[in-house]
Image 1 (tube, rainbow, N blue to C red):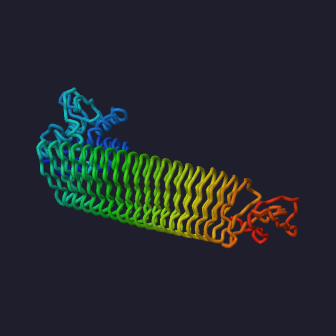
Image 2: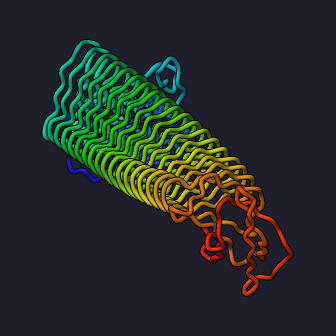
Image 3: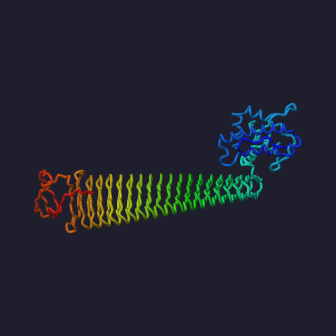
Length: 566
């Protein structure tokens, strides 16, 4: 018999119409007019089902669940209940209407040993009626198909009618073929392999082992401690509940561990890994990956490529490895190590440890008492709030203590070291460094190299160390110690305070430098024996009277004016 009716939903539900026409039991016992009437009604109900699924994005994950069946049923009852009942039809008084024109009229085709027309399709078309005890009810109130069966059948047809394999309550071994397969396993400890094709696999209860192999596969472990493997292709794996192992394989994969302590491996490709709850281990592998630990104390590894990793809540460990990575610890006391490349590290809330390693890295401790090691390269580090410890290591680094009482060490290289707010301790290390204490009373140590030290506000201690250093106390009563080398002690009219210089040595080339914007009037210099040396400089400065300065062993040449302040 020719097939004058075709499906119009644009989904896999359209194959239902073809299968009704292809049923040999119907075509031999039912008139063409009745089959046309029955398939037209089925097509209209398929359109309502397709609309319910699309309106609620129920098939975005490739599966229709029992929960989705509830949503479809509610949509039909709220939106199309009258039209649905009309198309469903009836057979009262020996008069058949709607889908009843073909239902219970001799159909013989089956799907997994279930009659297609009288069981599978009839069950689907009892959506829209009441649900009780996990089943849809007939129009007379009797129980029809289970919601689990409806979920399976709708998934099958929405998937385009490709191969479907069902497991049991036992430990099953289920294997697909070269087509796009659907494997729905039962409550046992099952094994499944999709083989070739874009497969959909659902593990169910039990500790399952599911492998997608070739193709773009979607695999759900659900309950139990499952092992899921995507194989080649762009795969989506979801472990569900339990302590699961997920391995994406080649391709751009998305892995979700779900509840439990999970282990995820992305392997090659640009992968997306999500740990969810539990203490998870996530290793992205090669490629530009996104890794999210979420809650729990997680371990995250980026592998090669430019990765973005977020620890989430919990005390996490993040390792960027090769590539220009962005690593964020989130809340909790985290340990973050950048690896090779120009990386960005953010500790977040908590007492964190950050290590930059090779490359020009940017490190942010954020809140908490953090420890930052910039590593090799020309790095930027900012401790943020809290009492932080920062070490620039090698390279020309830009280091900021942030709020709190910080300890900052420039290390090797020509570094810029800032205490910011707080009573900070700053070390220049090797190299020609620039140290600025900021607010409060700070201790600045230039150490090796020709350093510049600026105390800022507060009563500061400045020690130039070895080298020809420049020291300016700033606001406050500061103690200046030049150390070895020819040092310059700067004074500016913009600052106030009583500063002391404890190691002025003319033989080393030390000088006191007064800014040219200062009105200078020095009438006496007095040594320890109180012999006076009197001089004035009124050619470039206004003489403001007389003042007595007590400087042991100084001459006029030891005090100069200069524009080049710190």
